[in-house]
Amino acid sequence: MINKLFSLVLLMGFTCPAFAEISSQIEVSSLNFISEDYATNQDKSFAFIGAQIKSEQAENDLFKINLVGKYTPKNSVLSYFNLKEIYFTNIIDSTASLHIGRKLQTWSKGDEKWNLGSYQPQFRWNPLDMESQGLFGIFYEKNLGHWNLSLFGTPFFIPDQGPAYEVKDGQFESSNPYFTPPPQNIIFQNVVLPIDYNIIKPEVSDVVEQPGFGIKFDYKFDDLELSLGGTYKPSNQFAFGYKGILVTNRVRVDVQPKTYYEKLTSLDLSKKWQNSYVGVSVIYNDPETPEYTTNYNSPVFQANTAVTPYIGLDFEPIDFELAGLFIEGGDIKEEGPDANADRQSLTQKYLYNRAYQVTVNYRADVSENLKIISSLQWREAEKNLLKTLKWKNIFDIKGPWKMTLDLFLVETSDEATTVSSYRNLDQVWAGASYDF
Image (cartoon, rainbow, N blue to C red; front, side):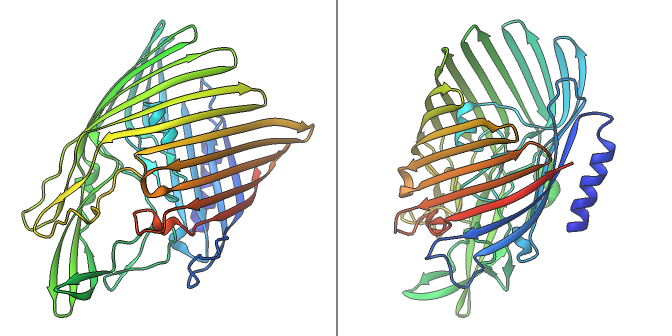
């Protein structure tokens, strides 16, 4: 894994400059879980070696890439590659361009502020600190004065990238603290029986070979911005159907992941002043329920509307933003021979349905040789009483070196919920990187 990572960095570093300005970075970092109640049977500290290849985002570049990889020898299931975007650009004329590949684009500001994963797939390695990944396909952009038109089409589909997991002898291993395993026991005829899971993985072609398309209009006049967009494509998350079979004194559960299509429509409206801005983002999601055979318990989706109002103040070198999230509808129910209205569905869509967040960013050159980039975010959600605090810091020593220090604190209700396993994931990241 390490050899492949460095080989990729060197290969891209030598071959890409002909198309674009590319920066490469090597990083050494450590992850430490600091909660006193963190599982005692797991390691609490991990060392990582990583690399990043990233374009400098020059407008005339014909090739752009953003690839990050991390590897830890202590627990390989925590290692990952995160290809956020990689695409080629063909400039048609002064008002139009064509992009081919995986490209990040803001389809909805509310979707990006909360990482809902409605439009773009999410990198969910840490489900409490998700990042957007670009859609894969062909993007056409046309400037029409105050208007900008974006068209998207693709024959392929790439879903969310979640935390890695291991299944041994029908049991989910607890090797990845970011992965939440399904229940390991079930009550059958008043007797608690262990569950053996059998994941029925779909063929790669059945997942990837699915088309999608989208359209987006952006309007900007003075300090007023309006955006209207929509897509018809597979959901970035899977649906999970399951059936249980009693085998002697154990229960075997067959789990079948499936993709399903969604119709998305969104509207963004914002107004800027000299040192402030206010806006609202609305997303309407109409999902199609996937089909399962009658002996399976399967999810039934409902349409939902997500509204994100936000307001911000910008006073160099500090800016401040307050945002809310209100999701109406979207409940996931199960139907099937073993469906239970009192049991949470195996398929989950949103971590939040009512939430707010406060974000403070600081960027400043504190000396000739030191630049500090700091972000502090407090988020509180009504669902599951989830509270998170994120504090990320970059200390840029004017030269090839950067230091990072990140803090994550988590609090949830004491009840068993879809996020209760995150309760003890308080953590500190520290790292150093070298640009070349």
